[in-house]
Each structure stands twice: as structure tokens, then as C-alpha cells.
Amino acid sequence: MAGERSFFFDGEDKLYNSQDFAQLFDMFFGTGVVKGYMDELSMGPLTNGMKVVVNKGCAVICGRGYIIDGVKIFTHDPAHTTLDRIDRIILQLNLATRSINLMIKKGAIADVPVPPALQQDDMNNGGIIYELPIAQVRITKGKAYIDSTQITDDRSFCDLQGQTGLYAKKQLGVKMVPNYLNYWSDMMVSDYRNPLRYWVDGYGVYHVEGTCGGGVYGTNKDICKLPVGPSKAQGVFAWGSDGKAQFLYLHPDGSLRFTSIFSETSTVIIPEFCFRPSRL
Image 1 (cartoon, rainbow, N blue to C red):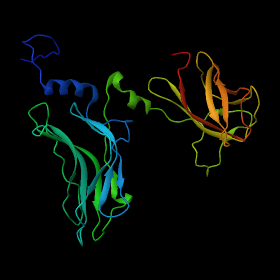
Image 2: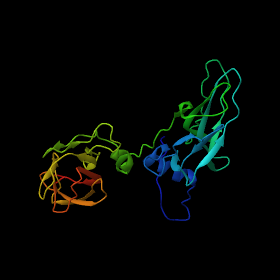
Image 3: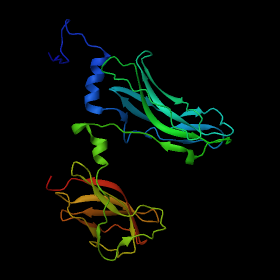
Image 4: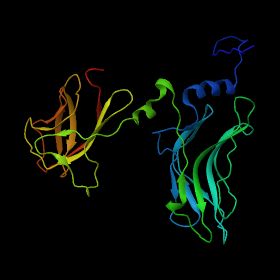
């Protein structure tokens, strides 16, 4: 017989525990680092020695949440003189201690080292420990410090299933070049700023951001045209390389057009904005 369960309801005969809540949250979020939240538990080496730093972020492991709002520094054990090893940085859920903690899981030295195995119990069937990998750190023989080449990102991100997948959905879509007009174009390849691009997320919302230059300024002059536009003209704030403000409108036909306020510095810098096409 299949066991049926449902929750949550009022009444003294209705008792729930943390596992009930965790199973429900697991249905929505899965297991992983939360994409787009603070620094996403990214990590890197410190300037010297055997230290690495994990940055701010949060994660969900089998329906249980973890947040760190500051950096955490770890010191790895010294390197072996003749053999490498691979350590892991992990997030460990431990139901025995009722906690989730960042920690080092030390590897074994070897001619061909491998990272230590992860303990990932079935948390819905009596499991106690589940380890979520964050990074691998190769401890190089005879080396007294860690640099970025020794760190491998090992994060996986939450499934954020169904319509709860806002962060994940927004990552979808290839960045595309708009149809430039009036001699506007990308900046030189050597320019450090992002070129003007647009992309579409999983909800059909358009995102626009970047820099272009070399074109013709003027009231009602178009910079470019996108495949679609908003249902009504949408104001867009930008600035020139001199730091002065410029104001544009994105029109329903997709034309990105100057108003009478602009700075003739041959550069238009547009911070990210988004719009919902008229067809949505």
C-alpha cells in the first residue's frame, strides 16, 4: 500500500516536524547554491599562505536552508614534499548536530590524487549527513601557498523547480547584437566595458545592457532597433563617457531613440534594463 501524506492543517491531532517542512521545500528548491544571491558562495585564494576564502551566499540542502552573510577563511594543512593531494570545500548538512556548516574535507596524497568522496545519505529515508561540494583545492607538493590555478569551482545550483525558478530562468538566453543604426557600433575589442547586447529570459522578458559608440547624436535619432518593443514607449537612462546623463526612449517598434537630452561624447553607456514585449 502506498502511504499518502498531506500537510499543513490545523488541529491538535496534526503534528509536523522539521522533516515534513524540509520535504516540502525540497520539492520546490532541490539542492544546491542559490543562484544570484549575494556572492553565490564563490571562493578564491588569499594573498599568501595556505588560506582560501569563501564569500557570502546561501544554499539549500534537501530542503534545509543555509546563509552566510560574511566571508569565511580556511587554512589548509601544509603540502607534502613529493606528492599532491586534493582537498574539498563542502557544505555539510548534519541532522545529528542539527546544523549546516562550511568545512574542509581533506584528501589523500597520491601520485594521481583524487578528491575525497562525498557522503550523500538519502535524507528522506533515515539519512544523517549530506555533503554539497563547493570547490576542489589542489595542494601542490612542496608549495607553501595556494593560487587561483589550484582551485576548481565545484558548485551546483538549486533546481528552483517550476515557477519558483526565477533566478535560474533569468540565466537563459544568448546575448545578441542589436541592429545598429546611424553609424552606432560596438566599442573597440580592447574596451573594458560590455558591448550593447540584448537577451531574453525564460519568461520572455527582454534584457538590454552595454556600451556603444561612434554614431550620430541628435533629437529623435535612433541608436539601434530590437526585434520587439514594449507596449508603450519606455524611458531609458544612460550616460556618456564624460559622466553626463542621457535620456532615451525604447519605442513599441523596438527603436532605441534619443530624446533632446544627450551628451555628445561618442559613447552611450546603458545600465541593464528590461521590458515585457507587447505580445506578452
